[in-house]
Image (tube, rainbow, N blue to C red; front, side, top):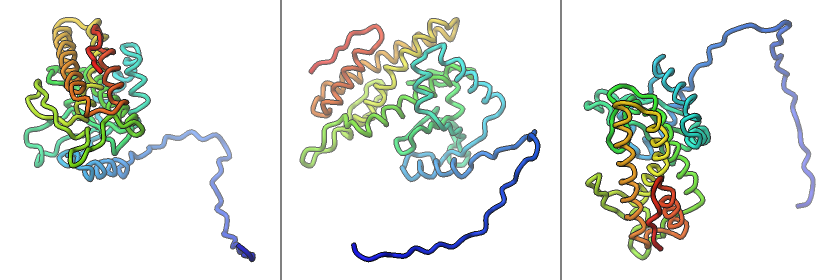
Length: 274
């Protein structure tokens, strides 16, 4: 390029910033970011994730106390769970079903989405529910810990999959490996291979948290957790076999991940096959 261009500048009046002539002692109420929360919900709705039947709510004193206790005691219960929650859950959005759109009440305990990294959504059911179908009759700090860890695991795998594709590409007119349907016996329905992998990744890690909680539990909680541990182990085993029995679905990275997951099942050797 030849020639020169002469830049011109205009001077704007300077803003006189306020200055305190003595130490400041004041209380400031910082408003919650309603616009940020609404953007999350709008993005989630645009991603067709089915949150239009929920609204955001502010946590009450009891919920705040439960959440504080859950986060503060998680490192002592399971350090790896605490690290995952700290690393992958930066924003927690509390939801409540809209009466007109959810007449049966809460049917979801927690969720997270690839489109919203580091963001987890939680409902009141997250204080009671343990997947796949166990319920505490009273609000449980442990149930909240598991809900947070569960979503941290999904968000973690989402981040891994931004660089590593665990499924084989589509061949001809066939579907991409992640979209192939697999029948899940304990659910009695068909899941995509991608959902099977996410669930398997979650259960194998939740098993460690449940096992640690079971060692400290007593009474009815111990009975429920013992059954939940057995259930998670059985579900993990089925999902692992379902994926490895269809090697054409997985990429090399996917097979390595599923085999590593199988080898990580507490109290079991991997049944993985190449």
